[in-house]
Image (tube, rainbow, N blue to C red; front, side):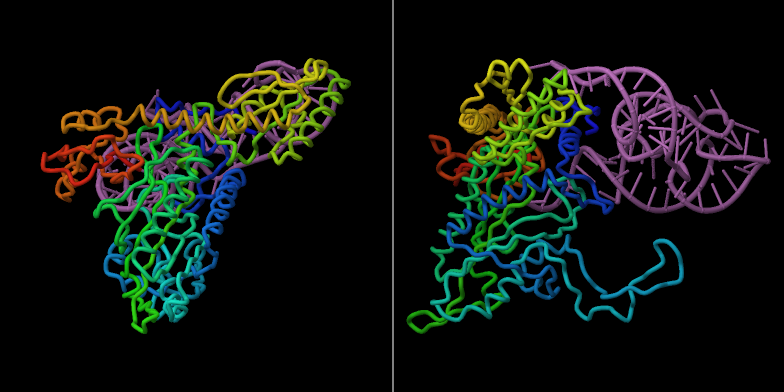
Length: 497
RNA sequence: CGGGGCGUAGCGCAGUCCGGUAGCGCGUCUGGUUUGGGACCAGAAGGUCCCGGGUUCAAAUCCCGGCGCCCCGACCA
């Protein structure tokens, strides 16, 4: 309820709009702890639906779930030089194991008991490579033990300066896959495979178009050999990194001594990968599809796919439409559709419409006396118009409509992204583009970190990915769009979240 | 860590300049009438005015000192 508040229009203030949509769709709320969020039932349901789809895909590609601890010995983080460098600035530490009463009141009533200081502080995991590979070292002896294909669903903590609901919070939920392989080629194939899984999920479930590709040195994961990523373009033309997959090489294997005996009797380090997506995707979902009326959710991830709203005047009409509404609900449920029958009597139908629209329900069925008489319901799409539908075969009609909505959302989002992309940019076009509306800019790149840094400094744009073949321009650029030196790869730039 | 905004009922805000003991809208509760795009009438409940000190006969309001939140930038998934 409480639908009277207005959502700030996107055009007025995109950040405010985003906050309003998240809050009014009841996806999440701010917690008493700065930078942390509470994921509310409606938002958590979206996450559960995401988890289920992804988990099925992980299982189908041979992975098993496991769980590793929240606490990691501080020294573990330090074992891989690049890794510790990457995370040192944002780890939370556990230094004591108990509190002591001070006799004061309020916030000063308790204090860490100095007697209980840990000899070695524990870090709250910002990611689990170190503790997982420490365990892999115990479990892996022979080439017969490989590959190891694990995943865990968990929370992690990164102490961020500035946070935003779902997009960047101090604590967030994610999954992290961790694998060990006998050869570099296998590890590379795994990293690429999982990038493909993410792409399938984001395109087909989230209806969010992504560009896949490789990260440059400056953007890759701390400790990885190579990082691959998926980048989506939000409605404000800023890019969102929606997932990453890393070929870790033997960096962690060497740091944690993960070795195996080969068939020939030699001793080799394993090759690792890690890959993850997080609740950040929910932020991506919001900023890809939603409008000034609230959340727009693709049917496959909508907690409520269909809402049935009865309309009546007299008691007789009420019992009539309620009967039909109940039947429709039951029939849709039998067809596996997530449906809500909104029988609340204290709200007028219009108020219900606004509420369910803010919550992103893709399809609404209105049933009034006139519909009952005509053997039909009125269908109203969250995005798109109203049309009557025969009661007979309603489940089929609705299923088809949901599929059409899902496909339509992907197409709309992809068209929008393409309309905000330019290819083969020159330096001046690039500067103007980034200063103006922004979006994805494709151009030649010399590969130098110096060029990258200068571009970032002058335009706030970074290389999002060196795109995979599916996304490259028909003609490979010959020179770096910035410095004019020979291009080593096409790159996609954007200002990013 | 810089720049901006803000903290008063569950939510959104007015009142602060110019001190006089707190109000509006929405929501909530009760009863009744309503219901094809945000219902109406009547009644009711609900507040340490962010915290601490100071000035004053009197502080939401003035002074000093804290704390917290949001937005923008630097850093980052």
